[in-house]
Image 1 (cartoon, rainbow, N blue to C red):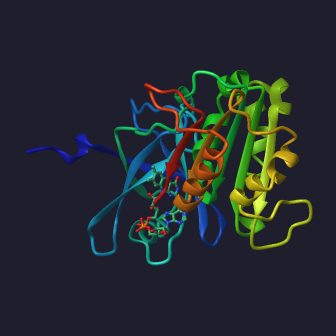
Image 2 (image 1 turned 90 degrees about the vertical axis):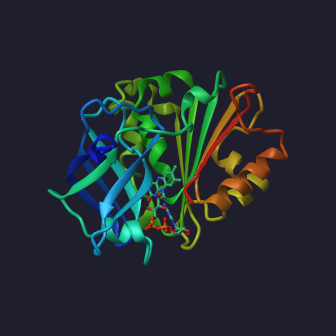
Length: 258
Ligand SMILES: Cc1cc2nc3c(=O)[nH]c(=O)nc-3n(C[C@H](O)[C@H](O)[C@H](O)COP(=O)(O)OP(=O)(O)OC[C@H]3O[C@@H](n4cnc5c(N)ncnc54)[C@H](O)[C@@H]3O)c2cc1C
């Protein structure tokens, strides 16, 4: 009979941080031998109130060199997985599948000078992992992190992001970062407030960043809400941007969270 523990390991939650009542991050011990590339995800499993198991994919926020795993989660009202997950805390166990998956990784792009990382909500997670890596900072002349949320309190990791060049061991490259928070349901002075598709279509995002989307120079990753991913792909598609595939290199890589 197949042994379930061959598929996953039980890891202990070592740290828990609530950003808002509906957003939190947590760390777990790292499974022995668990390998991943920055940008990948893993399936997590928890036990529901009725005793059954439920599994969902989660991007790693932490980087391959860390001795812990970190995840950033929403609480979906009535959501099967997140309702059970949100009950847990430090000292509790989470199942972690042994296999990391996913293609939202920098090896999707062979070239490019500027990397645009566009996210909504928890879709920021894989980009934090990438920014922990020195290679990301060395490879691109500019790293644009766009994080779109509804309310300013949801700008998780906003204090960490400007420190990530130093965390990655390349503090001298910190000025390559352009961090652009976008808050759509609350007016915040100096912060962009429209949906990212509108900000691209009307040129405001490029004005804020100081340079334009360019087919030769720009490589763009998009992660999070599927409507945002599709709409942004469409807006950039009108400007000639196409998905990067193994056989046909392009400028875009995307991941939808539902
Ligand atoms: C490759 C991949 C990576 C993912 N990584 C993460 C991650 O790092 N962090 C994370 O919180 N979620 C992530 N998700 C989503 C996650 O797998 C679950 O969908 C989420 O935890 C909700 O589970 P649930 O059972 O509570 O609700 P579900 O039944 O899975 O979802 C119910 C509804 O909640 C909404 N929803 C689901 N996920 C989100 C979300 N993240 N933000 C806003 N609304 C959402 C959607 O409307 C969805 O239809 C990822 C999904 C994929 C496919």
